[in-house]
Image (cartoon, rainbow, N blue to C red):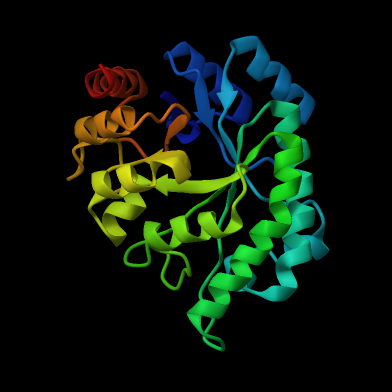
Amino acid sequence: MKFAAAGNWFSKDWYQNVKMGAKYGFYGVEQLEWLGLDLEKAGQVLKEYQVTSTALIIQSRSQEVAKYLPWTHGMVWEDSRDAFVEALKETILAAKAMHVPNIIATTGNERNDICREKQHEIVVETLKAMAPYAEEAGVMIVLEPLNVLVNHPGHFLVTSKEGFQMIREVDSPACRLLFDIYHQQISEGNLIANIREGIDLIGHFHIADNPGRMEPGTGEINYEMVFRAIRDAGYSRWLAFECGRTMEVEPLCEKMKRLIEKGTK
């Protein structure tokens, strides 16, 4: 198990956040957007500080492609498929320049003109079209369910159960689920059982407490037990903090490292 700091903890620019992560002992830093970065410089900074940028979201420089990517017209629409494939190709180039292992995909908002089963099928077919490019590049597409009760009303993919089923149907080693512990606590609870059941289908984790989406220890989730369950299930990829903070950076990082040690020893 490897843990990445949230880039927003450090409140600097992208490059400085990498340096701050290394300073405080985190050799992964998650900062999702890549548009506007100097990719060569980013790669050099990551190499210099021996830090991994753990995930990027699918983006495109092309306005024509980008108009199909927002949640208001996302992966649940058939006519977005080619745009998602093209945006993935662009994002793969950014990921390879920075040696990023994960590319995050989301389904977009649920449609009201066709049934859920048809939308599920459309998403799976789009992921099937995308997966060979990820396989060839050696990166992983991670599909993220999101909660609709607090943060993302109307989003299509909510439960880990449906997300796992999608991953099974895509049937590619380069397509897995992003299990966001915060979102799934809100949407369904039963965190440890769901993680154990689907661990072979999970490619990435996001970490935040509930309520409030701040660092572990500020809410109801027993992260020591969750980390231990993930460890015992044999997971060895990245877990990234994706949360705000309620304290200064130095004590925050020390507190999170103590929690990680307790949950993984």
